[in-house]
Length: 83
Image 1: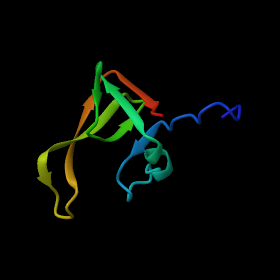
Image 2 (image 1 turned 180 degrees about the horizontal axis):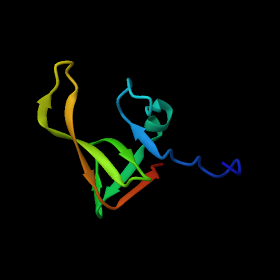
Image 3 (image 1 turned 180 degrees about the vertical axis):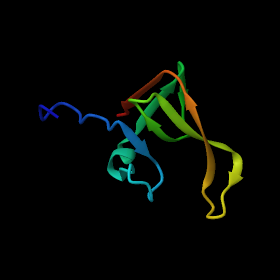
Image 4 (image 1 turned 30 degrees about the horizontal axis):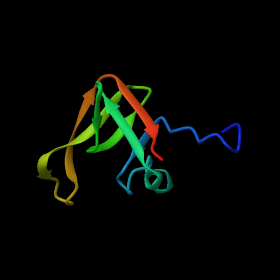
């Protein structure tokens, strides 16, 4: 961040799972928009800008701890802060 009026830079990697080292609750509360391969996504569990991938839930399947099973999809990725 270079100026008080400028919004903070988005992290290279962000996860919605509180147990992840890439979790940032404050940033997630502000709202993050994700566009993957030209389509806006609302079900993204984690993303990585430098490697251009997202993780999304694989249907309704859950692991033994109750977390959704995810799959990694690679492609063009755009991320922005909402509001």
